[in-house]
Image (cartoon, rainbow, N blue to C red; front, side, top):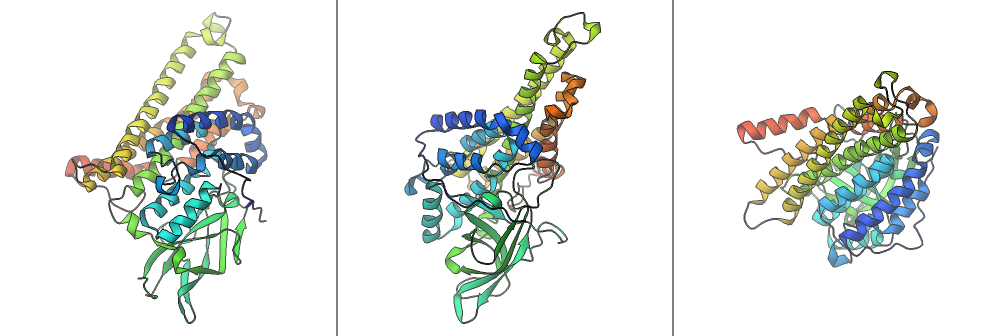
Length: 415
């Protein structure tokens, strides 16, 4: 089954400041939270909510100033993402690849492609990834291919199948990772990202995502059969991932923001449940659950955990800001390495916090919180699913190697 919404909103607002961006994010988060549990229960895809994101101007926050955008710092964007994730983690994850691939366009695309993509995003356009595949030995194995069209060095045919294509059901543009095996015109062999309209002939977007969490992200299959692509649509991925650009730290920062937002959302729900629905344990000798000293103690511990994760996210965001902006006082490679390590530390903490806090929600709320109608399990399921991105065990490896041996983290785009 294919269910795609590629109609652009009638108009998109222009956000004029960081303060306005955060205010708009909070307003939208409040509305998204209202029906988040029902959307999760019914797996009702958030087409209207994603349109509201486009209309709000939030999806254009990182458009460079020379194209008319606000060009916010990574730390600001991560705060916006975390705010939305606390309300609905699926909605927060949908534009993750949108922002990551806008960053690729900014770093590495030609002028014509930059103009096309950034103008479209300012008007409400959305980008989604078609990167990972199933069936290879590792996630780095890519079988999708670009083949030069007969007699035209500037045109190609794209064939392949992708999975984990988050946001593809809501996208206007797909960013497709594919390999070119032999030189073609001015293009060397390598991995390229093709930016193509989601409704291009030969593209099939399939609604088959069935994970236990993040159920409404539209992260299923996209198939490409003889899709026409031009050289202008292609960006060499290595130009961003094989140089100290902070591309990986930027992408990982947004993943951390989603995990931290889930933790905050779970704790907020727990507070509301205990205040309004939970009963005290009889041995506490109190009339209200909020007066049970053991419950009070546990909430204090959970708040410290979540606040620590938020502080780590903010600190990592500042490091990524420095790496992206550059500094006359430090080599760029050093700034990027420090940013990657800071984000790795933040992700390790977020991983330790998000799933346990989402589980502790039931511990502090009591047996009635486990009733199916509460849908409080969605935070744990979302945390468990999203924290599988880019395993933390490798973050610890890179942190340890950097600390003990002075080894910079690798430039492969996922740290």
